[in-house]
Length: 470
Image 1: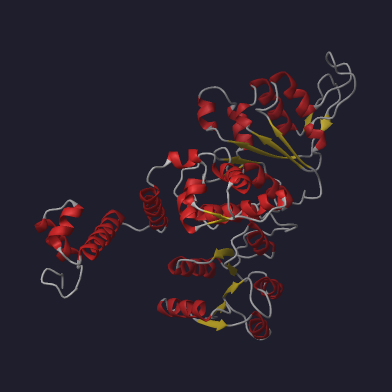
Image 2: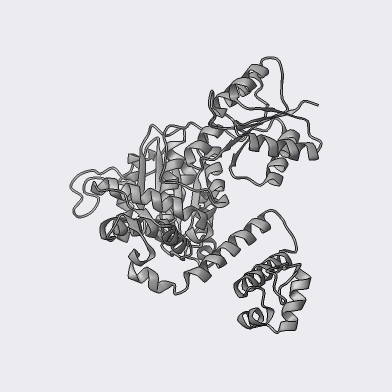
């Protein structure tokens, strides 16, 4: 059997794969550089390649290109610690089988390798990476899914529906879809259908002829014509009036439209990307949105997670926005302390990424010093949460539970409850020097109950005192 190749300059990463693959009886070969792997590629053919993306003496992307040039069916899994959109799209551009961000779960990585071994010739799509979008950052699994989707859609002309709460970055994703598409050289035109008065929206979208209505003194090209050959982004599509829904459906189904007051059909070669924060299925049931239009728009759906579902990204986003704000204002970039970052990560932030960006701009202007502490945060933010410590561990618990559920773990209630009790009791005993009576009072437990739990949980504590736990 041909081996799986592991290429990474980090010895610890290679060691982890060696142990995991040996345990699964999967043949493997490891390399510390892309240069060594490329040399071996001249005479050997691996079954699957797993390669880091950035290494001294050659990149994983160069290896990907050479490997795919030699064998287009060879699955290549790209690893990287750089969790930005550019890495994901660039990997898919070369035909990568999958994109694996570090740090990764070893069992998930082995499962991915097994899937690559079985599916073999399957290719996940190619992307034409023409630029970076550093404002779309995210290491959270939900954002990695979005990055993968953008990579897979990069050669597609399909209509996309982006859903997500206000402030989650729907227009940024729409721009990224356009930038990494075959239409990238053509215009990207955005229109918020909820922000334009109902009686003007038709003219905005489709344009009008001279004299079509009072005040129409000249012919006007609408957004569809302006976006010809490119992408039209229709934001807040759920608020579109019924009569315009009908006209939009006709454009999507027939590929042409008429200007207001016009009689000649105009061909529309436009990719439509729509977005909404509303539940369109519910609006269809309520008769507020056309069912046939919904299905025309809902060809590919991307859901953007709210910030509370990707709390691990808050620190990186905050640092990014602080640097941007400082550059705009021509001042030194401010820095959030660890305590301030933890406080922010525990907030609900209903305005999502947009609220965080506005907050960072406020801090750049209003914070008294370069180093930002919790006391420097806006008063209204501190009023929203009286106990950040409690919210912090609850958020961490939610993150851990979500990770366990994603991996298909069972019995997690018992495991997490046991871990919670063990940590709490151990800390209480450490605080009291092992004195059970005092610890039981602090915990609100009876001493017998505490003793029983100590035995059940296997807690050990030895401070050389009579009442200490052995």
